[in-house]
Length: 93
Image 1 (cartoon, helix red, strand yellow):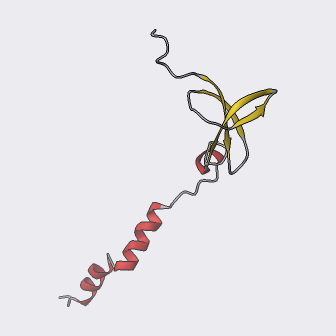
Image 2 (tube, rainbow, N blue to C red):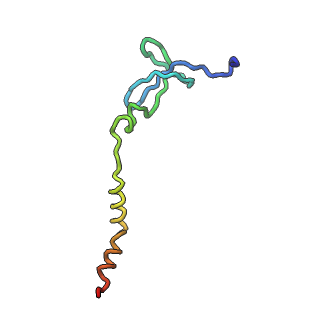
Image 3 (cartoon, rainbow, N blue to C red):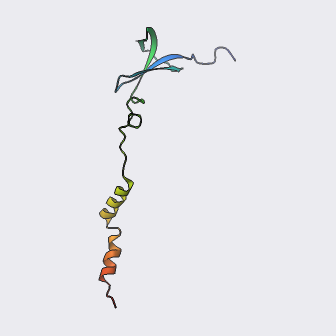
């Protein structure tokens, strides 16, 4: 490997700003902030969302009922109603 062309790979602390949870991960990211973590002074990177706060990972994700959305759309635009009305109004016999 060539010397001097690769970024420095080191331990970095990533902190979730919404929950305050900190993760120790190896990274090449550059940052000026530092933090004391497990007795060591390490670079700190703050993130808005991580697995500690994302709804998918926390189990607080809302599932949308697709059938309910289709029925709502049909009611809004009277889909399916026109055919029923047309068959009722046609004379029989």
